[in-house]
Length: 513
Image 1 (tube, one colour):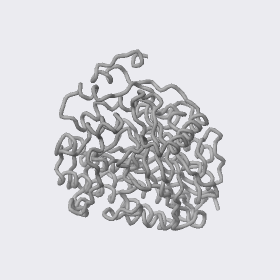
Image 2 (cartoon, one colour):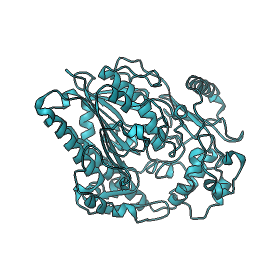
Image 3 (cartoon, one colour):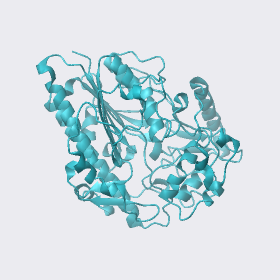
Image 4 (spheres, rainbow, N blue to C red):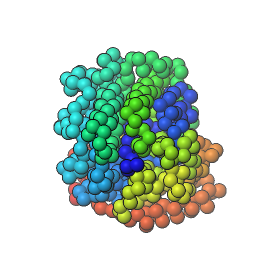
């Protein structure tokens, strides 16, 4: 048998617990249930960074963002970095990307793709020319179906969602699905049955990242009344919470929003997720119909999650709650990977590409930091994983926020985004029981975070100040110290330019260099 194909499916901003395969009782995802029955489901998969570009570059290069210098959404894959597509291309694979990129922008990296069809959460990437194949639908029709996403209705400064009635085949999720089906058909039919080079295809769905918009037929599947609201704790973000968390809640907090709008937002997120799941089901069907399934490794994951009501917020920010850092991860290759098995150990998404390469029989580059995943391979289990946020920039404080115009909300989130992306150097370590967050650059009065995930799985109470947890904190600090020592500091990441710091009037020397 020739080397296996790779189908790497990714969603954007999809938290694990939005899926029935991870216990959600409202959002049924039968295609992912099917995929899980054919492979290994990792219950504790953690992103190395809960932000798009850092998470994606870390996955593809199997290194932490601080090692790569990709610690902001403005710092994509650097020059000369060895990553998955370079390895696959060197091994003779036909390579491709269908969907959202937000990882590669250098010519030398884009040239590694034989097929390139880019589409993100607001529609087609017109600056990215098609390569290797055409979209499954006329681009004019795809653009027409993007109209609402370009100018979303806003129920409040914090909440925005829409239900629309465009032709179902013209929505981005459908376009990516149908184009992938065509890719698989073309591959199966190539060379009149002669031996074909294997493919490595990244199918990257932009949903359920905001804008939160869903076709009516999917929105009707999830009534607001059917949604289970996440648990909350009164005064979770009082003075005992870290200032960063309090600032983010001040921007995004839903306390003054109607329950109806909160439920509607969550129901649309579920509708978008189910739409993607149906697309994945169609892709699985096409793999089987073309005879490609037997020799195709399938991996499904997401770059990071979404609050979606947890901690009284929607969207995401620079904090480390599980709704943002815990992502779905399924690996399937029947006959080579165990089927219908769950792994409860701690794993990182930087382990994905080394796992695929091991299953392919390709040696991982020495630069890769990640090891293969357990259970899917014979690698050992880990008891702790790490995540990070920030690139050493100045803090965005409550006083900086209060210098911005009210009412706060999504526009404030975007207006302060680059400042908050770069601030500090937060580091998280998570085991199956404990999560600890520390920033060595924070002011001395800034609080660390510690959550006991056994007694408090919703992470509503920070117990770092509890003297009985001193031993736990010492152990977690040792883990963080060892991790950063082992992984090094990496390149200096440019800070945002001065205009991104004007909200609070900060023009210090750290901004100017």
